[in-house]
Length: 356
Ligand SMILES: Cc1cc2nc3c(=O)[nH]c(=O)nc-3n(C[C@H](O)[C@H](O)[C@H](O)COP(=O)(O)OP(=O)(O)OC[C@H]3O[C@@H](n4cnc5c(N)ncnc54)[C@H](O)[C@@H]3O)c2cc1C
Image 1 (cartoon, rainbow, N blue to C red):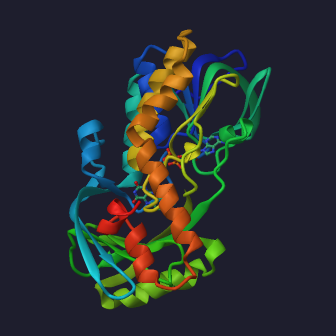
Image 2 (cartoon, rainbow, N blue to C red):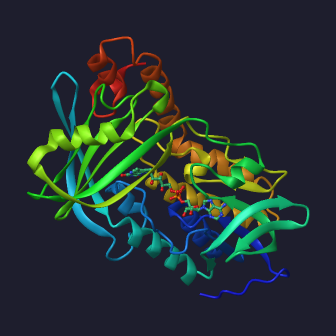
């Protein structure tokens, strides 16, 4: 990786954030002929991992999963409702080594010609360019188009006044697993206000976590302790801890043509407001954003609105529906009848798909 950056540096496209959305956008912009700089404030791309690491199998049909990034396959999603009913739904997918996944996508971008700079944070935008901080030093770069792929609390989104406003907060332990598992498990109920607990197997380990909506009451540590007690001796010692924010307010308008900005992934609120899953949308919308950014940088008219139309045609209805289900779930959380409410609002239940 090159490390020197000078004030004279100019790129067609600057991608802020080297997660799945950014790496995918950067790669597709470079493949479409743009000069691309991708920066990330982290020291090592992909770390620390802040994810339960499940992706649906369908993503593999659309994206080459980096070598070594799949830890195991899973076949189904088992949901446990508060009244004890258990719903099993086919949900074939993979549990990733997310650090390898992110690193692999960034390496593919680099192979396509993207200049990749970790330890580099986007600070502000002005007529003079984009101000970055790299290893304690400030500098400016010039760019024609900015792709904000900088996660739930996007700095680039703030520049154009598009910010996620509603979040689940997540806390997760990776634990040793006593018996191998082939299914993911989800637990719903009053211990996990507005969210859920999960047990996702990962070879001889598993990710056990909780995501909750703080505005509905409850606290993360007791919620995580509750699911760990419930799982009892199915799980062993804790080997890693993580957590993070999940945007659940629904998708944002993901561009500002005057500011020449596109947003993608969590920065654009493209995560699913009920499940919190966001990796497939980040990768797929990232490819769309990168292509559009290259077109815009090459003078193509209408590239910003085309990006918005394109990603909405694939994910818009799904994400808007999830956001409206969340609205329903949060507004009625304390109204009693929690199992019925969760049947209407949780994706594994038929009511989720049929209710208006
Ligand atoms: C606890 C938890 C569990 C989850 N589990 C799953 C799951 O099992 N399956 C699933 O599909 N999704 C899951 N998600 C959601 C998923 O992790 C996100 O949807 C996904 O990471 C979005 O990718 P992204 O590239 O948009 O953002 P991110 O992966 O967040 O990447 C953003 C990058 O931008 C960088 N950055 C931020 N600000 C700046 C700046 N100013 N300058 C430079 N760089 C910056 C960050 O360092 C980061 O590397 C989970 C999330 C959490 C918190």
